[in-house]
Image 1 (tube, helix red, strand yellow):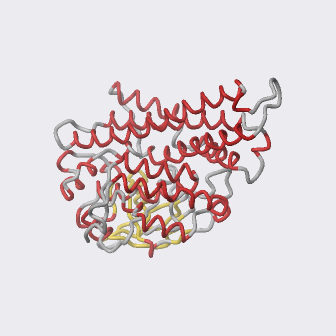
Image 2 (cartoon, one colour):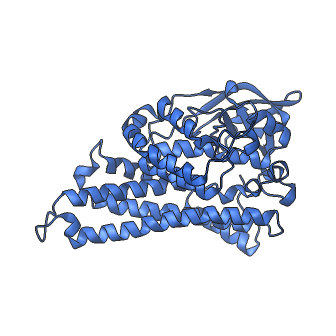
Image 3 (tube, one colour):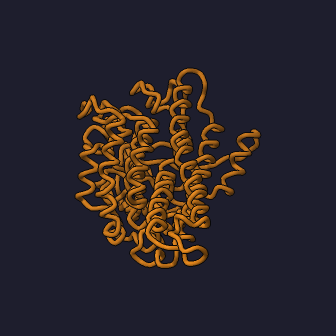
Length: 403
C-alpha cells in the first residue's frame, strides 16, 4: 500500500489539526456524556490522516516525526483535553508495532488495516487477569484490559499478558478487533470523561505467535531493531520509555492552554470584586495569575516539543553508533513528568482565580480543571515515585522499571 498523500507536508498536517479545533470544541460536552468523540469527528480525524502519523509509508502511513505528532495532538487537546487523549492514545501505538514487531507480523497487522488505531493497556503486575497460553502456532488469550484509551474506534488492542503458569513472564500482544469486545463502562470518573478509556474484554481469543513479544524486547538494538531493518527509518529505532509519557503530556498541556484561554476570556469580561473598580485584566492580582500561569504553560509546551526533537536525535544516534540508552529514555520520562507538573500548576492557578461561577457544571474551566485533576492521581505517572528509578539507572545501581 502506498501513502495516499505522498506530498503532504508536516506543516499541512498540523494546519489540518488547527482547522478542526472548532469542531472539537463544539463536541466537548457531548463527548463527555458519550464517553468518546462522535463517529462524525472520527471520520474527520481519519480523513485528515491523524491515525496514520506514525504508520510506516509502506503501509499507507506518513511516518512523520515526533514534533509533528505532538503539535497535532496539542491542537486537538487544547480544543478538548479528553478528545485529545482518546485520539493521541489510539494513534500513537502504531509506533510500538512498527518499531519492535517482526516484519511478517507487521505485514499481517498493518497490511489489511485502513487505519491502525490501538489502545495500550498494561494491567497491574499483581493481577493475573490477562492470560496467554500456547495453542498451536499461536496464543490463546483471555482477559480484561481496563483504561484502554482510544478503544471505541480501535482496530486492535496492544495489551499486556502473563503466560499461563508463569506470571513472571509477561508479553505485549496485538489483538485484532474481531477478537475482543469494548465495554460501555467509561465515564464514572472525575474528568477525561471523553477519552474513550473503556475496558476491553477477550474471551478465548487467538492470535498468531508473532503477534506477541516478550516485554524485554521493547527497546532498541541498534541496526538490528526490527523497525530499522524493515523500514530504514530511525523513527522506529527508539526507546518506549522515551515517548511513553509524551502522548499523555499532550492532553495535559492542552488542558493548561485551554484553561489559559478561558481565564483570559473571564478576566477580559468581568470586573474585580475588590480594590480599584477595574476590569480583572487591569487588576494586578489577576495579572499576576495570568503572567505566572502563561509562563508555566508556555514552558510546558516548549519542553514537550523539545522532547520530540530529542527523541528523533536519540533514535538517529541509535543506528549511527550513539546508542539510545536506557538512561536517556528514563531522563525523557522524567522531563515528561515535569511537563505535566507544570501544566497542572498552571491550570490550578487559572482555576482558583476564575471565581466559583466558573466551577459550575457545564463551565469550560471546570472541565479543564477536572481533566487535569484526573491525571494528577494516575498510578503509573507520579513524578516522585519514578524519580528514584531515574537515579538508580544514572548511578548504575540494581533496580529499574519493570513493565
